[in-house]
Length: 173
Image 1 (cartoon, one colour):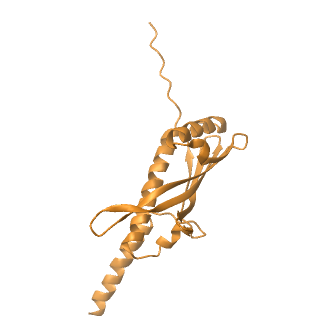
Image 2 (cartoon, rainbow, N blue to C red):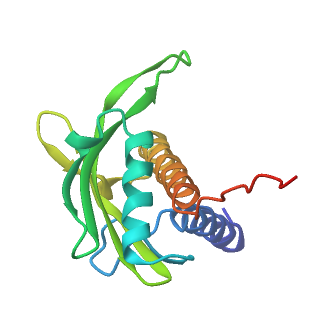
């Protein structure tokens, strides 16, 4: 193999791998973490009520999920899990385990912040999902994609739930 072809292959591999890994945010500690400050109309009390309403609609057992609901400090913390699947050679999808994660919601005037992280694969023991970041096997990439899809859906749902409720005024006659 010519040296130019080899370098091209290495560059293509690097571009494809880094392009994928950029969709999964990693914090300074090397942990997968989704975190954002969202500017929105409201105050901490309103955000707290919206967040509790969203949690109650998003999770089937919201009281089990939330570990902290402190309106005075403007913080809600939770712990939950979701399933990941493995695709077999014949295309059949089977259960591959449960990913546990933590979330934190914080509220200030005109903005709120969410943090979604501490992802671990729960099997016989807790396995940090960051091991999937450097793995080259298709299975790890599939798990990362499932994790990212879950997180993106969670964030989208949260942002919708945190918008101010529009009250329609009845037409006066």
